[in-house]
Length: 463
Image 1 (tube, rainbow, N blue to C red):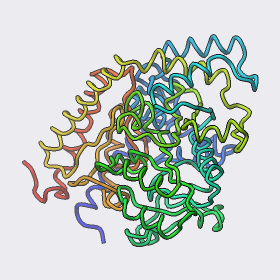
Image 2: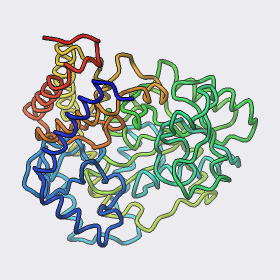
Image 3: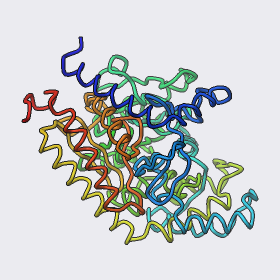
C-alpha cells in the first residue's frame, strides 16, 4: 500500500519525467526509428532507461550533447570509461597518428611494451596481457584461476557484476526473496540462458564477510580455484572494504591453494594511479582492468604474478583474441597512462571530489535528508540511507525511487549521471572544473528542496 509520501514522490517523478521527454523530442524520434532494426531500440540493454533512452550527438571536454542540442556536464562518464573526459588532446593525437599507420595487424606493436611496463609499475604485478572489454578480462581471469589450480569451483561476491560470461552471471542483482539467508547466499542465475551446471560451480559470499569464505573453503577442500571480487564494491553504489577484509581474503585463499583476483574494471585508474591494489597494499594474484584504461577506446588488461602468468607464457592456458593489444588501443592506453592520468591530474580530481562531497553533504544537512555521500577517488554517489552500507543486503534497503528522482532532477538541470539510480556512480574526469561540480551541487539542492517535505527522512517537515 502506497503511503501519502510515496504518492507525492510518484507525482514529483512523473512531473520530472514529463520535463525530460519535452526536452528531448529528437531522442524520442530516434528511439522510435531504432526499434525497427536495433533490438529494443538500443545498442545495449543498459541503455533502456525511463522515461526514454538518451541519444547523444558528441562530447567535448567535460560536456556531452544530446541529439536535441542540450548540453550536459558529463558525470555519467560512460560507466567509468571517460576518465580523460571527451576528445582529450593527448588521446585524439595518439589515435589519429596510429590510425594513419594502421589499426589492426594481429601482431604486437611497441606501444604494448610501454603500456605493460607502466601497468606493472603502478599495480605491482610484473606480467600482463591485453583484451578488449572488462567481460573478456574477467573471463580470462576465471579461466586462468581454474587452469592454474586444476580446480573447478570459484567464489564471487553477492551483488557484484563482473561482466556477462556464464561463470559470473550469478547473484548479480538477486531479489531478497531468492537470495537465500545472509549467512549462506544462494547461487542465483542472473539471467536466462545460464546453465545450472555452470551456476553450480560458482559459490557466493557476502561482501565484507570473511567467515562465509572460510566456511566455503572448509566445505569444499581442494576444490576452489579462487575468488573474484571488486575490492571496492561498485555494482551497489560504492561499498568500501572493512579494515583487514582484503588482506584476510588473500590469506584465507592462499592457505588453501586458491587464488585471488581483483576486478578493478571500474576502480582501476579511477580511484588512484594504481587502483585499489596500490591503495590497499594488498596485491592479488590477478587484476583485471578496462573502461578508463583506453581513454574512451575499448581495451582491457589482465595482470598477474610471475608464477601465475608463466602458466600463460608456457602454453598451460591460451589467452587469445584477434584484437588483443591492437595498435589503436595500445596507442590510446599509452597516452592515457603517460600523458593524461598524471600526478597533477589526480590532485585536480581530489580537489573536485572534496568540493562535491562538501556541497552535497551541506545540502543533506540543511534539508534533513536521511542520506550520505560515498566516494572513491573520481567515483562518487549519494546513498539514500542514514547508515553506511557494508554489503548487498544493506544496499537493497536503500531507496530506489529517491535515486531515480535525483537522476531526473540532475538530468533536467544539465548534469548527465548514469541512469541506473542507486546502482551506479558518478565519474569526475580530468577535464571537469569547479563550475561543473557546482552545477551538480546546485541540482542536488533543487532536488532536496522538492522532496524534503515528504516526511520520509527525519520524520519532520522543515520550514
